[in-house]
Amino acid sequence: MKKLIKYILYNLTKRIRKRTEFWIIWLILGLLIDEYIKEGYLFKAEDIYNTNITHEKIIVFLVILLVMLILKKKRSS
Image 1 (tube, one colour):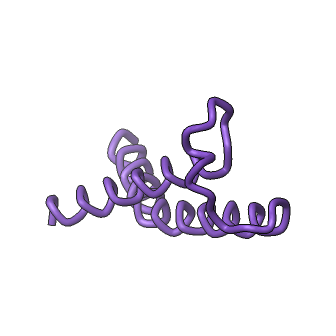
Image 2 (cartoon, one colour):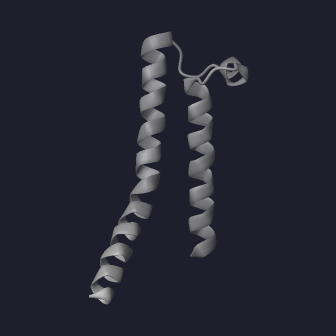
Image 3 (cartoon, rainbow, N blue to C red):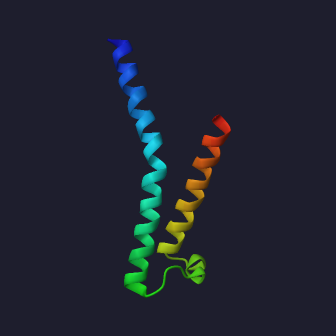
């Protein structure tokens, strides 16, 4: 029973790791499209320095996260 649980958890985490990069890219694209529809531009660097949470800050965070995941994957392989 313990082996079955370990096997299921291993496969579940393996699938999640494979799809994480895919979903982060889709989130970035979705935010860029939403920003273009709402504001009329894709990315405004000035909004990064704004004190409020903006699309640009979320996009920068997701890009940094994506780069970190890719680098981690390259180092481990």
